[in-house]
Image 1: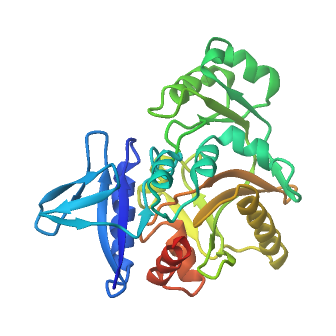
Image 2 (image 1 turned 90 degrees about the horizontal axis):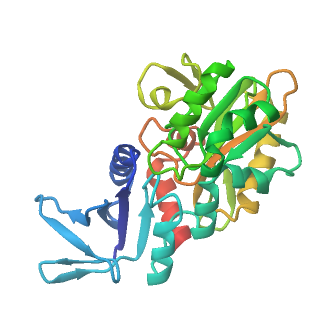
Length: 332
């Protein structure tokens, strides 16, 4: 009997559009001889599945089943490809834990924690061989005095970003003090990000993104890194999703020592945060020091054909369908 997979996508934020593209790619790669895949859209107004004839069926939220014309579809596993809230911040995972449905991503606490960039950095700050940029975490109560707090504690230039956002939405690079207030307002007011802002000192270096996952045998597997080179000021939303603005090199040109060091650090990050499934770690290698600087962790990374993880899976010598199957089997 085939495994019934709820491929959960959509979401409550501006990242929903990317989620739909990611989910479509995952579905195209999954082995239909092994899996019955049901795309499930989660939106603010409804949770539903649309069949091949365009008929919409609502999800029963009591047990996450579908009543398809009297036939009840009960899922074996949830494959979460929902960027932003509620799929990446732990809300969905808490619900699935309560109804007893296994899923492919990190658990509730890890997901909630890692959506908070400032809290994540605090937990990871003492990992050997890894550095974190000097930063200030600002809450809503700090808004009136935010400019002064940043100027007192940090040196220009800055990265200013929502503390709980994704896809670089609401992020700015600030090179002069008179740009700071506008950047802070942009980050504070980014939709569904919790009115918290993280301001970091700029690290000058090469930028990388690297995936890691736990396979069905329980082994941690570090994928080859991708180097990101963009014509933009930094790797912002446009650079991520508009073709031609960014060059992505997979596998990245790193020395053997740098590759081994990155792998050690990324495995320690995965273990310390109690991650599950696949995650992606973004980092800088500082130009003058060759130090590894943690940027952030993404617990539900993009999965379009051009996204970093599929690139890295191919560079690793693995087919995407086999990779997604490993995630499902590990969850089960």
